[in-house]
Length: 246
Image (tube, rainbow, N blue to C red; front, side, top):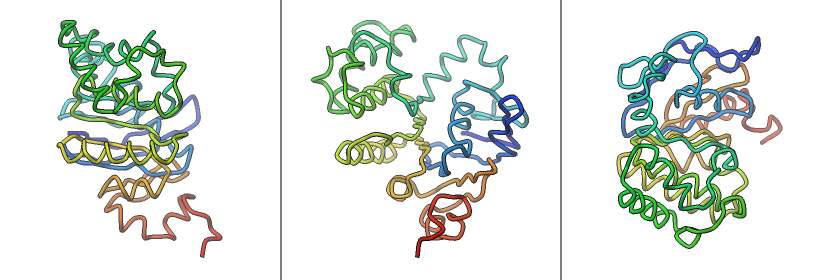
């Protein structure tokens, strides 16, 4: 479904990604591991068609995703319906007057009727256990509640792929456990789930495959999560565990 081939990305003169190549199959759950600043967030923005490779190609189901392709309104709408994105900072994603309007925004933009939109929004709010927040203003919510609203908004379009950037940042332990369990349920339902994180415990819970980025902005390893997490020397070199650990 997703294929990166020789992808590099540069901000001005600063490299964010160097020669990245990997593929992800439909229905696969993958964690992108790496320290802060290794390029994980940039990769997710590329994956969602928000920016485009400086070098190399990104293909979604065989079609190269380019600025020209994403300027085709019909394709862009379909693409963003199929690939849902939850930003690291939920504040950047929430802008509507109520939680219901936030979750209903995507279906409305896609031209769904109001009855279908309301049904989808209420179903997603119930799925995340936040139906009681329906008429609240998003900016008055806690960090965990905002994250759940952002996930519900992404799910309202029933995407085939759900991409989450550091989804557990600033969450309390109870909310973190609930969201991790929810992501496992999505995986079991056949969704493609891609999670960026530097939390090794979360990676161990969420996926059988991990792609490790290091501080050179390149892929250091790609394979089974359990084996990758067991390689302490590799994790030390990638600056994901302390060199002083026993």
